[in-house]
Image (cartoon, rainbow, N blue to C red):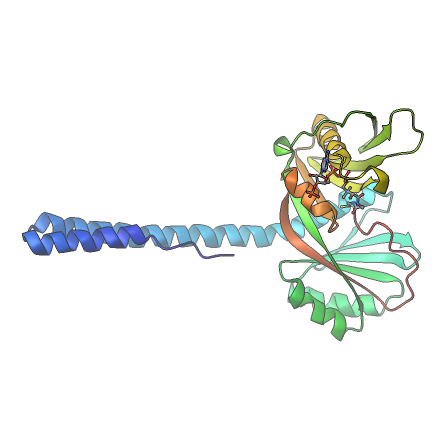
Length: 283
Ligand SMILES: CC(C)(COP(=O)(O)OP(=O)(O)OC[C@H]1O[C@@H](n2cnc3c(N)ncnc32)[C@H](O)[C@@H]1OP(=O)(O)O)[C@@H](O)C(=O)NCCC(=O)NCCS
């Protein structure tokens, strides 16, 4: 996190007042110079303190966001409920090449054990939420894990701030809610096959977006934005106020344009067992 900038104008004003005092020999100007200097120093201290508090709150939030995201993701995909482990969660994905996945933060104390556990587990994945992908990758290499190379972004949004995009002409959308799962499917008029789709799991006040996709023949026409808008609106109706997702490289610019904010990066590795499936990594 960047340190807050200096309050230069405070120092400039204090020096100017001191010079005026020197020139006019007016004690009031000297008094004002001291007062402005003290106020500037106190102001800088206060801003620094606020910045440190915000950074600490952000660090404390990530583990919580990981747990909340994993709960929604597992619900959307009908996986068993994630199990809390030191540093994150373990999810029984049950796919060939990806039987089990640990999703964790990059805290050094817990990451050391996790990379060892994953490397000793066949068909396992490790996904690490971090602000420093380059700092995490060497842990993968050292433990003999296969780095997945590509990167995702953990993103969030206050759903009230979600942009609203209309469906382009010539398409119609269907929104279906089943328990806590909302699915949106878009088709071109008169067509059977899906042009775009996506789902959101609503758990309490969280809505976790999953499997957002547009068929290549229909991309860059606004369908992805419309699907997200419909999902966000339906999730708000279902009681959610906060969105969470892991974005692919293709999805990230779309979500940013809709108002989502990047919380951290996500790097992934897998144990050396042959992988037969990498379809739709997290979203
Ligand atoms: C990511 C994905 C869902 C986007 O779907 P999409 O239907 O193309 O999304 P949109 O059309 O709403 O927006 C995509 C881009 O098209 C642009 N666009 C929107 N309407 C447009 C129009 N009428 N004409 C031209 N471009 C348009 C958007 O501004 C956006 O531009 P940007 O990428 O430069 O920011 C799609 O690329 C995809 O399925 N990718 C593979 C799966 C994937 O990665 N899914 C995301 C998982 S997190």
